Length: 167
Ligand SMILES: CC(C)(COP(=O)(O)OP(=O)(O)OC[C@H]1O[C@@H](n2cnc3c(N)ncnc32)[C@H](O)[C@@H]1OP(=O)(O)O)[C@@H](O)C(=O)NCCC(=O)NCCS
Image 1: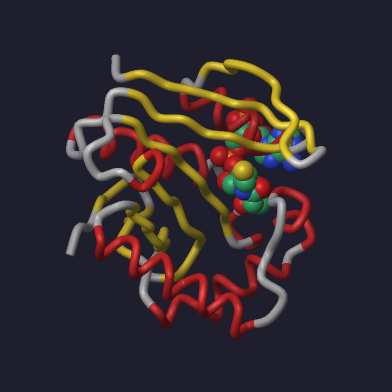
Image 2: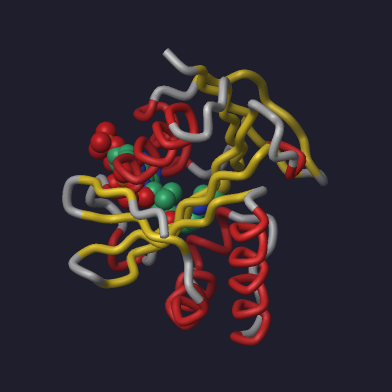
C-alpha cells in the first residue's frame, strides 16, 4: 500500500469504509457549489468510492484519503489523462471535509500528490479544472504553482483550466 507522509497528515489509498465521511463531504453546500454534480444518496456515494477503488487498483487513477491524526479529512485524486496509464499527463481533483478547511491542508495535500505524480509516476504535466466561481480552489491552485491557461465554458458553466509542469 502506498502511503505518502506530509507535515501533519498522511495520504493513503481510499477504502470502502471512508464512504460515510465521503458522503458527509458531498452533502456540504460548498462542495455542491464546487462540483458539477454530487451523489444524491449514501448508496450513490458508496458506489463512487467503489469506483475510485477499482480505478486505483487498475492503476489509471490514484485516489488517496487524507488522514489527520488518523481521521478522515478529505481526498486527493490523481488521474492519468484519458485513463491512459502510458500517458505522461495527469489531472488532479480534491475535496476536504468541512471540519478541515481553512487550515492550509488542501495546499499541502495537493503539493504532495503533484510531487508524487512527477517523481514517482514520471508525469510531465498535470492539469486541473475548476469552476471560475470556486475562489477557494482557484487560490489553492495558484499557491501550489498551477498556471491559469484559459477560461472555458463546460455545459454552460464558466471554468478555469490550469496546468503545472515538472520544474
Ligand atoms: C477547495 C478546498 C479543497 C480548499 O481547502 P482549504 O484547506 O480550505 O484550502 P487552504 O486552507 O489550503 O487555502 C488555501 C488558500 O485559499 C484561500 N481560501 C480558502 N477558502 C477560500 C474561499 N472560500 N474564498 C477565497 N479564498 C479562500 C485561503 O485563505 C488560502 O489562502 P491564504 O494562504 O492566502 O490565506 C475546500 O474548500 C473544499 O473542499 N471545497 C469543496 C470541494 C471543492 O470545491 N473542490 C474542488 C473542486 S474543483
